[in-house]
Length: 248
Image 1 (cartoon, rainbow, N blue to C red):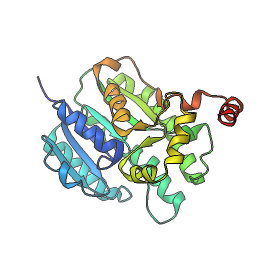
Image 2 (image 1 turned 180 degrees about the horizontal axis):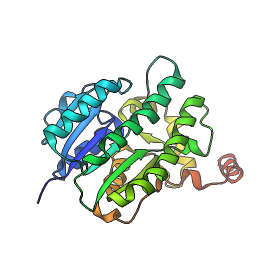
Image 3 (image 1 turned 120 degrees about the horizontal axis):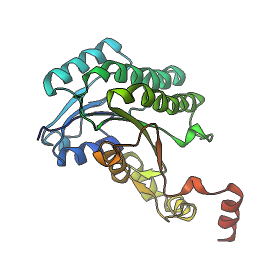
Image 4 (image 1 turned 180 degrees about the vertical axis):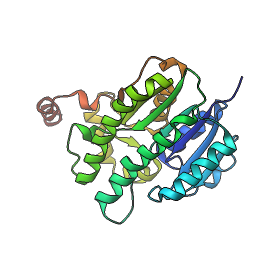
């Protein structure tokens, strides 16, 4: 049986890094694009290759995509988890990294899928499409709202080609970059335990497992949807939540 080729954009840290390991363990050929080189421990993961590129450099990105397809063959899955973390203009950075690069990736690679019935694209969405995340700039909210519509648009337009398009909307999770913070600030961690119905925060691995599901034949009739993985946090009415916290 031919191995699936999966391209993970934003795959050297956090959720992407966890996903790379899961797919590699399942026997996928995994291509990874990141703004930073992989961790030393990841370089030896079987059937996995890494490319470092600035997504804002269109010429460089297109060159890398051609190299990836040339080296590892047609795609089975594309997962876009990239996030702007630069120091320049947030508006330009967020829109270009989140929206423009995703559009380039999808439209450049749409003809490079292997034609199988379980081809899929998964995009990183956010609860910021429905709420205001106060510690994030306007550009983040606009960009994620654009991703929300991209999921539906490409699901309709790529469906006839046998490509499903879905999104993943993570809740508050513990990743490498935030683990030390929560270890040092137990009160914040305990607060999240109070307001999340499952009484705990999620992990990068748990989000990655849902993405793996969306890349598998088990989700073969799901397209145009965003799965919220937040332990039930956004299911609660604010007034009820405030009363529960106050009473505790």
